[in-house]
Length: 411
Ligand SMILES: CC(C)(COP(=O)(O)OP(=O)(O)OC[C@H]1O[C@@H](n2cnc3c(N)ncnc32)[C@H](O)[C@@H]1OP(=O)(O)O)[C@@H](O)C(=O)NCCC(=O)NCCSC(=O)C(=O)O
Image (cartoon, rainbow, N blue to C red; front, side, top):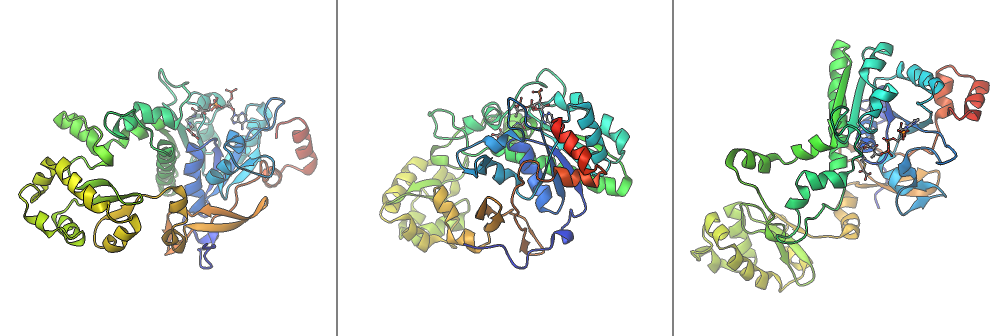
């Protein structure tokens, strides 16, 4: 287990130190984006709805998933909200909105991932908030945008993986369309939003100009189609699934069964094919006219794969990895436990142990970005409303006023 690096950059020295972001966010997509902004030094203030008779309040993700800290704090929520602040505030009420506007006056950016038509209804757009602070950056992450026939449609990763072709491209040919096992559309949309906000903040620092940014799950999913889209649009080729997660144009580049699992071998270049033949002690294949050039191997894929299956099935994944790693593009196929318990990941500082109020040794995956050679330090996610009073005090509200707001469920 690797703990927090002693040399991690101080938060005040991080690139986004001094930037305040207000996040009216929930679930995975919005929070994953602000997680990046926060890890890079920005202060992230989540605005969460107060409890009502029908709901416990807060980002609904606090109740999501299988594992909880204490009675009520989901580990799902932790994963997306490390290091943020939490303020409870009813932004639908006039009084709550007035407090929100005072807070906007202290902020650099406001982001939300509410359903498309809500930002306008709740006044979260630059058209409203720009009157309070002209240089404010307003970002909207939604399923399908704020206008148009789909504006009010609820959207989740799964739906976009279905509609944007991901499911049709994933899995074995002829089998049921398959979703990637993680909500990658959510995460990419969050990161895309964080990138757009960072660019807008950079521009605002030079020009003082605020912005109104829209990013949708739909557009982000479609943009990931990259070269298959270009092939389809310009050559009419609709890429389909390849057997065993194979590469669309290179062989051997796919999953191979070993004696105890699977290994992925990727011989896109001729030199790697030559090395593979040497490592698996099949030098004669180099002179076999059916396998000589990349084109020969592509055309004779089924035969070559049969040959490779017979040979690769003779050893375990670990035995093949010991022979191939560093010489060939190769990876073992690991399950989740294998991936997280991988000593390499741990040596890289990929897991941090942090003191959490509800679990003394809470373990979190590190942000992948290193700044000046150091990992960014993970910090616990906030308890619901942990920072409400502190932020209200900063805005000039006294303790009696805060108690009154709380009694009336504005906070
Ligand atoms: C995810 C959703 C389908 C969830 O739908 P809903 O639960 O109906 O959420 P809504 O956004 O419509 O908001 C719920 C209500 O909470 C209200 N609301 C929210 N915050 C506040 C505060 N602070 N104060 C008062 N009221 C609030 C908001 O106005 C709505 O009121 P009423 O209008 O009165 O109800 C939708 O938010 C959505 O499409 N978001 C954009 C795309 C997105 O981010 N999808 C999730 C990806 S994550 C994912 O897929 C995953 O984690 O898995």
